[in-house]
Length: 166
Image (cartoon, rainbow, N blue to C red; front, top):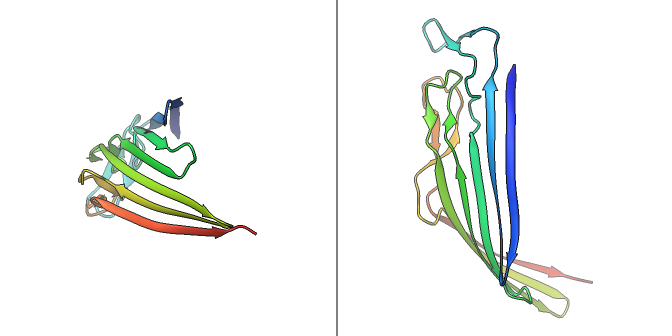
């Protein structure tokens, strides 16, 4: 049996020339047992004990997202900075391994134009601006204890959209 308690706090705000918002969530996801559960794993000699109150692996205990955006009044240009953070994550059922928590900063810019019946927009996005090393993916209960996969370093994406109204 599992017990999950989740609290989410979010707020959006409009300031002169800026829009912002954020969310912080807390997730308490625990294994609840009347007695310890013995699990046999082929990769281990004997078994492992999952104790009552262990965190469910693969789920961060908390997370944060915040954004600050500036947009021209005619919406022809938009600039934004965002931050995303997560707490540590249990990598296995017995909670003997955890990934570290992390925070990354991302930037984006969008330009928009309208010409006759055409609408064009160009965008540029830079993720992981400060080139942080962190765990981007976790393989729960990986038998050879290679739980962690790195997230990409600094990366960017650019593109163009065009649409025709008729």
